Length: 528
Image 1 (cartoon, one colour):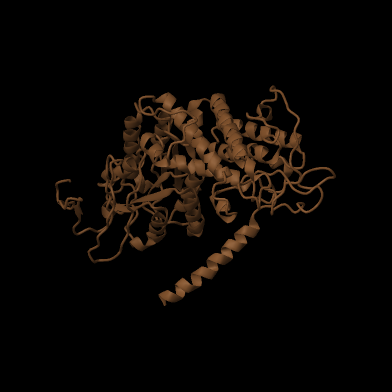
Image 2: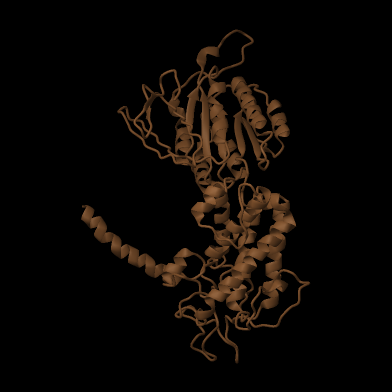
């Protein structure tokens, strides 16, 4: 009964709340994220998540403002509401939020990973200031090295860890109690003067102050008390009244460090780090057996069209990735940011041999997912079913983890079978059920499975160009195997410039109705 579900939900929620409260790490500084703030009942506390997000948003906005002053005007000190930021920063897309999320999670995980949550060198605990400072500078060097090597995902991880330790310093030390009004530059700049101070202790020594608060196991031993400024709650932070000042300095230090990082790597690389103004990757997984001549040609022409359209675009260079497969071989992975080199890779593809069922398609898709950036659109050209079906769950899991969409363009054309002695071999048309794993993968990942023919493949491949457009969002993704009439609605506001509909499958009729009630019959020859 519905009532039974409601009654059962309340105890479950209470149980989860209790478990989460007990699971908070004992040596943390600023609360890791939004949920920690709720669990400690300190609604106005500044968390690692909040400080990191605000700093990244504002430094990114400042960087874009310098590049395009006619579009964006702001300073790092301005904290804009999220909705205004999105409306004004047209160069920022869902990829930016994904990148920020990676940094934020890496920051918060320092308080949760078993290898780091109790290590004083990650938190400026136990008077391990020299070790903690060395660890901080190690993260800085790792971040710089990763950015310069274009390993942006690794850079986001080390950046999150760097920010966590840097922010912890202002909550774990007596820097604020000493009356300091500015950030401690010596932490990341050895040439700056150093200042003597103390840091909190995880294990209490005679005459030393403890961390303090409910999460401190030494709070009842001499000397009692503590100076932590983790939150605004007196239950968790003895110096809760200094939390706002500690958070202010931690935020200022975060902003200063991000400015140093931008100056060290340059604005362009800094924006690449956060996936700003970055074109979606163009990823092709290409079956190169002898029956795929038309598909390879269509991929070349479509890639050339995309490259020409991007030629005079001021955005960052995108990633181009090609994974060929031809049983029993898969790969190699061809990856480049040079469009001419990508075209060279495509021109060197040759459709030779093969023609038998099946092929190592999922192995190639797995390679493409592994090497492509998150949120990629991956396009698979084949006419064969998968020989490596055992990889299906692995491929699905990776696609979901990276939030990448996999679209299959499957050609079924038996007209060329046996046309003369010199004709290339076309696989005989078999049951579409053998493509079930493809349709499942595309459905799970948010892509499409499109059945087409040799004569239509070039026209159908236009979906590649549509789906790799910049700042694209999905307004509606719906699937159905019902024969009845279905109605689907999606919302369009002033921020949407162009709407593209992709309809795949057997369609008897389709009517598009706008908010005024005007109807467009899409199955007719004219276009709305």
